[in-house]
Length: 393
Image 1: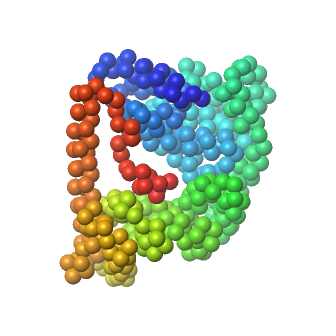
Image 2: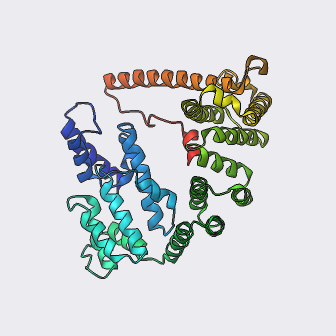
Image 3: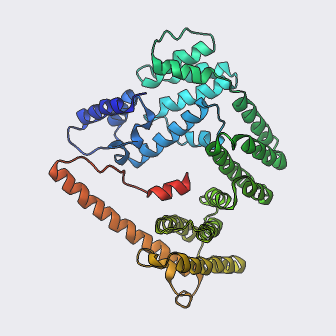
């Protein structure tokens, strides 16, 4: 696919509709315009589209990651679960149907393939791949002489026994709700993936932990094995990520452990502190939404663990990054100034909000001056910092 060319085509289509008015991603006409011209799902990860809509930017990442995963023959159930967040009203929906049809092909589910392919609108770029899928099922000749489509055909037609066996194995374990078999299967697949596909292995590790946690499985052995496979730092990061949404209070402990570990090994930086402050702020916001003060302080063991880790993090930051005090003073607050660990989390939450408000005001000012000068938009998308995104990848 030629992303730059498609970008100009889509940009022209959007601008021809908006006629200089502000972009509205919720407008049905705008979404239809995008849907009919969306040649490359990665477009909303690029300028100028990445800053038009956070929702479309997020959906672009989900679709492309899932598309890349299935065409590479990797089974990543976490990515496939994220696909469910893309509604039928999304301009990425035809691509979602295409991805599911590829999975159905791998699973020899020919009946479902036809249903999925039949739902892909003929006027969308994704429909060009429909004859390819049908040709693999020997129901249609693709009849397309196009290098990109031929490359797609070769990807899908390759040997994907791994994705078939992995999907079936994990599905069987979950259907019988066998915790030990599920965890053992996930770990075996991760070990198979690590040498050649470390990113897919980490994603599967993250999904396995989230799934095990949501089903109430005991995950202590799973965490121990992840550390053996990925090392302590990466296992701490994956654990924090897996717990971030459902157990933000426990995630905070793992993020602080991750920070201390990184500092101890000389991998700390001011950017890391800023990224973790933002992540801890999100977790703190969720904690204070769910629990009142009495509930928080009733768990004495957790309070002690949190306080101990905060003090340890402060000590390590002061020792390894003393120059960071001006940028992230929250990590330098003397212990005597914090009555309890939740007060520190509230400080983190308030400071991050101030930093975000300041950044947004600056960005609006810069954007206003750029528009007035008639210059191009910034080369980097607005939103979370690069290191924060890296921690979540």
